[in-house]
Length: 252
Image (cartoon, rainbow, N blue to C red; front, side):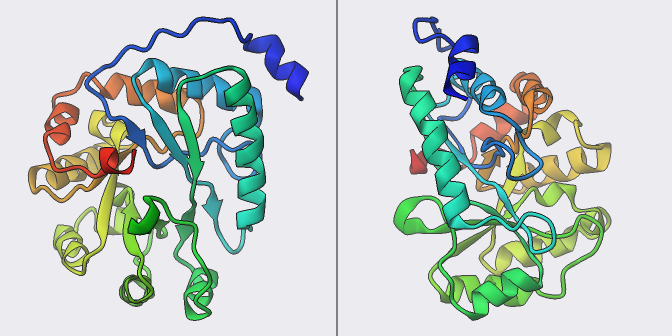
């Protein structure tokens, strides 16, 4: 595995960082190989990480899916992949920090974790941000309870890409209700260029207009998605978002 990586990414290859008025920290991606629907090899992961470096990022917090029926990842699996990836990053002398948390799917297995008070994979050190998502199609009956239980256990819940949930497309008021419960929002950068859909773009812009976004994330699964993120760096709404009181750089 290591020889294959070095065949593609030689240690003496030069990297030129190109700051693009972007963020220093990305806190949502799927860059640990072959444990979810993200990258499937270390070569693929390193190729994308190099592009993050070139775009000016200093830290990536990658967040593999944990989903009861599909991606039954554990902290041990995730940290093992992270250690191996960091070994390669260090050997290639890439100037970036790689950490890991998780993107939890709000299902019965997640509620069971909360009921048992299992330690969740969080980011931000003592701030204990927990990234979670719901079904794209249907509102979760567990949402309010999950937010309360996370908060009662000292976590700060962060809802991933609220602009992508179809059940919220015609229910913008629900977004305000969720935010008022103390749940933070993370918007996908490429949603601002219409990468997902026009309704997603409209909601992402609305969230920015209303100063409801706490984090911007790449949600990068592959090189195609990172290309869409880079395209979004040129949009007006991306630069408008950078003027918000975002929390990304506070977790550097």
